[in-house]
Length: 369
Image 1 (cartoon, rainbow, N blue to C red):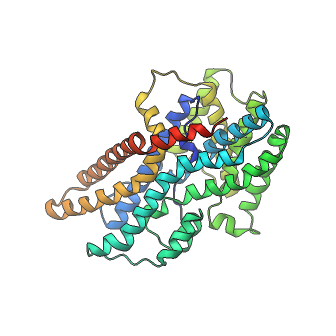
Image 2 (cartoon, rainbow, N blue to C red; image 1 turned 90 degrees about the vertical axis):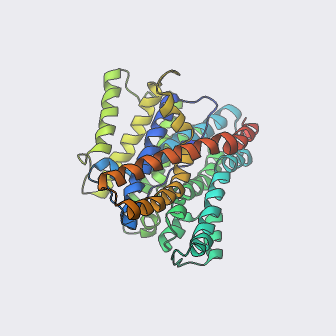
Image 3 (spheres, rainbow, N blue to C red; image 1 turned 30 degrees about the vertical axis):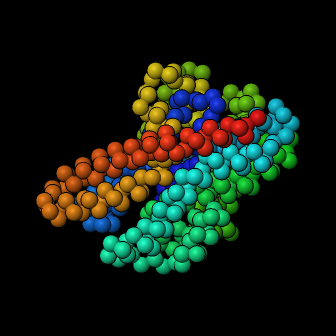
């Protein structure tokens, strides 16, 4: 079963933003949303449309965010190690707490209240096959992926899985990078990516795939970031060549031409493609006056991912009521659900970013060197 999420750091603000990466964030956030809309519409019996490959690329969008996360976060750790000779692990974790935890816990608390108290109060049957305390513990210690696999927590809570994957990875990798000399970063990250990817898809460690421990995407992103910062030119000089990468990436998302029967080959192609895409986007960074709407979606993409399931549940509830009252056509129903969900999610994410997350983002700056 494939579920999407987004990567946490794929949404992180930087002191010096690469604007083209904001556009990528915005696009991938929308892909996640349009992936979940038909899934849940089908689950509640409403008309849905999934015939185009782009409506089935949510998991791939999450992997792009994982790769972007590694590129940004490990790149920042490398800069800190090289410039200051050490990494302040305490400050690193505080920055992550201030960026991720507020929205994470808002969604977690809302999801638990929604499934355990609100739905029963409204007379809607939902049989939770887990204990409330168990759900709290697994999500608080950032094992939401284990929670999602072991139980059926509901779509609002299921969405937390990828945030857990990122936190697990950085809890492991940050202390290791703090101990390593910066000149060894590239070699260690490359070896980790190759060996871990092989083990992930082997039969020796089935739990890695079972619980979606996609760490190799983040280490691959970190590898290309470090190589670039060390002076290796991994992007194409000519714009036409970079355009070719963008076209291949587009083909990957809107067709099945680059899907292979061998899972290891398929994952290898995706890992390389996403990493190469990012370094070329950085090389081809856009100017301030281009794509302002998509860039803003990139800024609020963490909220888009975290809140869209809450909005979608509300929209589907309204959609079911309207379907019963007016017997809407399939096209009308599909358009209503998609447009309302996308618009509502963007609005909620905008207000969250402006009036809630921004406070913690400003506070986070105090913990940067």
